[in-house]
Image (cartoon, rainbow, N blue to C red):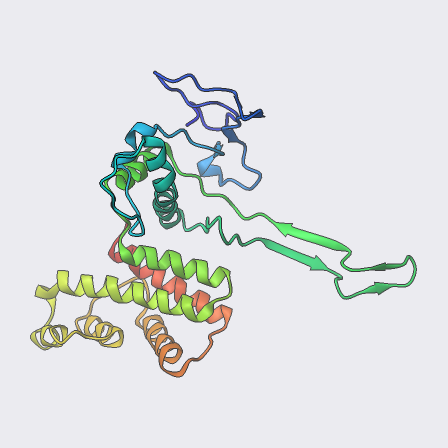
Length: 279
């Protein structure tokens, strides 16, 4: 980590390791300035290009369920090679959950547009687009204290709450125009969060609603129980009903929602999940 934000190309500090400036005949760049918009409240900020991992700690790193257990004692560098991808996925999940950013390196989504792609010009002769327009969205940096919390959680093999991970998955789906999946993930996040809230506050429920809660209510029934019990949320019950109805249409009638309705449902789901279980 750089000692001060906004200072590029600073190597990490290690008390017992000499950090080289050249790796495999290439300059070992560690940090850089962001080539995008940084919110003023988060400025200045520095982009990490690579991180330093002490291979002696790999035995304590979380392992993927795909890892094959073995009793053969392997050197630390072998363990590191086996576990680093899973470690990165755990870190990425936490960062995406906390910042609502889409950071999947295997399926990047860019805001790019070709203008005039279908035109053929006679004079001057030319085919193809005139302009390629690229948009760089804002970057939400992680504070130093958040990095510490994330790395501690990953070391302890602690994942974010499932409802927040489902919201992350829903955002990734809408970015890739998978609207049906985005609706299903958003609704599942609400169902998990709302059921937790109803159980936690079961003593506040009228007797008739407590009986309904014992019968493993569906999402629509959960919303009805909360409404009949006069629970209030930032998200309106009208929007929650639209969410539940759209989820049912997607699952039971294989309907394909459009971007606008999917975005509204994700907004509703994000509002209620963050209200019920803030990180």
